[in-house]
Length: 110
Length: 114
Image (cartoon, rainbow over the protein chains, first blue to last red):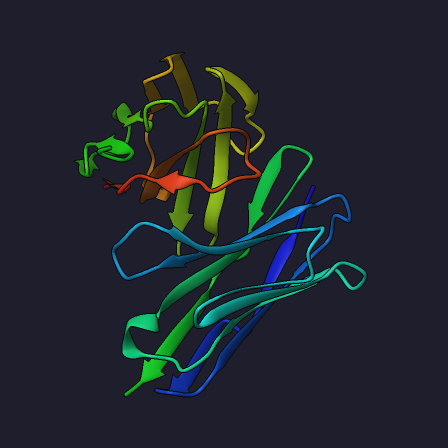
């Protein structure tokens, strides 16, 4: 089955700087790649997603890039703010199964 | 819409007891997912229903776990007998379509088995 790995596990950034989280996946048949944000004690919520026919997608301060050849995708957060502090999960969907990575803790230091 | 509803929000039980978690998906959604979240294992898919039919239950840890979806608006996850290692947050999520679209998570049930 699909195996999704996220790096680094914890990321600390100064407010205003950019944060980048990278994920790799194993199944070349995967065609949908969402990112979820989970604040402490809350439920995961979708922040951005990308399908395999697109290489990049942007929504205000967040963007996702996909490299199908290398089987990795990344989340980019620019101009980070304290409210960006959370755990971010990447996921890959293929063969009727959505597999999540273990999550990255992002800490934005004011 | 009220979103995905889960009950109870917190459950504390003793080892060996039966635990039943409940979920009401968003009206109109035809896929429902049960996840378990722990620090060690992250977010794990337990079972996935589409149109009330279990499609993938390969994530169900063992026979002590069972899930049902008797109709489009209700699902249960049962653990019998419960064990301390079952302590986790259990999320239910729903979506329109399959797993290849946005999943809407419920608030979760925090289960503690002593």
